[in-house]
Image 1: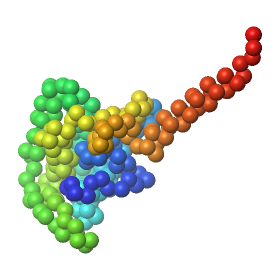
Image 2: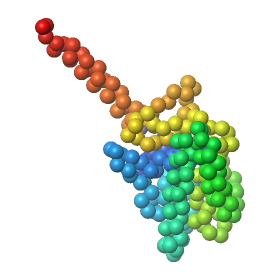
Image 3: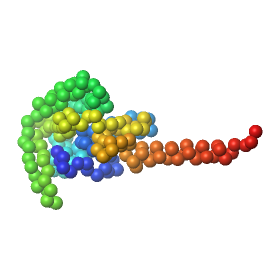
Length: 219
Ligand SMILES: [Zn+2]
């Protein structure tokens, strides 16, 4: 878990626009053109995402892939569990600030994950001179995979961040994000996609109004 280095750069496959690890994880359940698109289609996609999110480095990704080949049933169970956690975290993101029931249910879910895995916390120096914290699970390698994600959600509760967690202003988009702008008026998950579409729609609206007023003929 590399708090100080968050967010990582978005790549072609995954977008990191949520400003928080747990929200970007929620956003792996995407909606594109009205259709649901699960970015975590299989266990390999989950490993790829964790690697892209800097939760797993290349070495640990390789070792978890080897483990998945040896224990395919364990990998499938880990994927099912990850999706279950994601649904709970989506509820927390969308309704946690309004509903104490949602947040207390999520606490149970978070503690379920935190309570089942033992591991070692480490501080590591990187080649570029920066330091990162990491969690190395012992025993069941799959059990520890979601720990950094749920810890990020736990931080949101501890630091009272939920009131600033928002859904994208485009009703067709289901992405969530933490609004860390100064004026707290961030509306779009991403200016490059939803923000731009909204701008283009406003522009078309204006153009239509102008055209109408020009084509109006006297009665
Ligand atoms: Zn959006």
